[in-house]
Length: 140
Image 1 (spheres, one colour):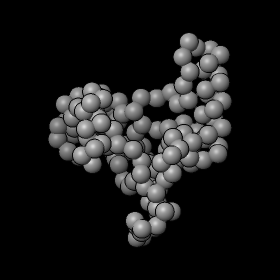
Image 2 (cartoon, rainbow, N blue to C red):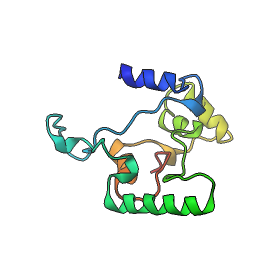
Image 3 (cartoon, one colour):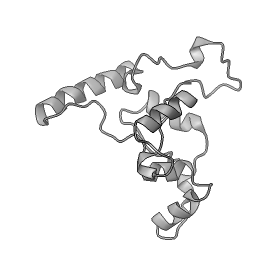
Image 4 (cartoon, helix red, strand yellow):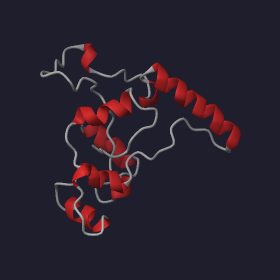
């Protein structure tokens, strides 16, 4: 954990800026079993692959995006999203202050229940295998 915090710090990330909030990699991939066996290799995602390369379907999508972006733009990319924009930080941390107040202010005084973070498996599935685009918020 300390190592990841140092990497974030040296990368210019800070807990004081929602748009530069620290990022942490997805390490586990088993969020559906009652008990998590940390001794099992099956509990961990393959860290030698990018998050876009975990499944063959996502890898093909990302590689096609790389080719398309090279043809259309000056720079190439596989996944077009930011790590963790401020809105996403507020969505994940919405039941803690000052995030709760900031999110309600951001939503014009409303507290929208459909944005409530319920469980991590629901967030992991779109990131890992089922969706071709990567979500940045934990929508229900």
